[in-house]
Image (tube, rainbow, N blue to C red; front, side):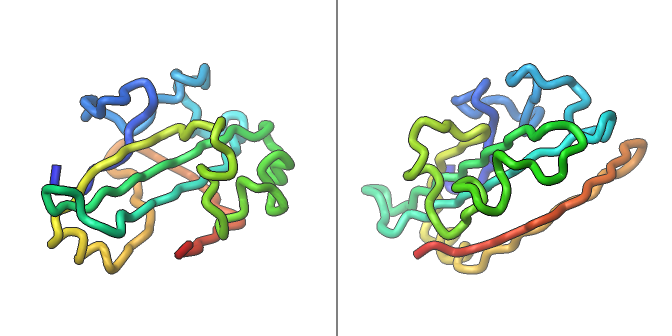
Length: 148
């Protein structure tokens, strides 16, 4: 595809599942894994690798990897993934220093030269639940780096 796509869980590596982004049950997490009952804490890392040269069709390859790590309930310090861990060091390419730690979500896609040029500007943010859905998310120790 020449348009951006969201990453999909490893339970659907072909990316055909268009109904959900991630199903925690693939990791034996409860269906309410994002709800704060008990206080569920996760460490999340996202890497976007932007292709530097076009392929034979003239498109640019991108790899979007996301790791979601479950911390101990009610332990905001999350010692296994705290600020001193390799996981939290966003100044390095995590996938290259931890080759055995497969991303929770992954997608490889190509962008046309026009979309590739548009990707020169990167917007990062969060959306909110609407309708009958509710959410209460606390984001701490957020970091963002661009590796060249």
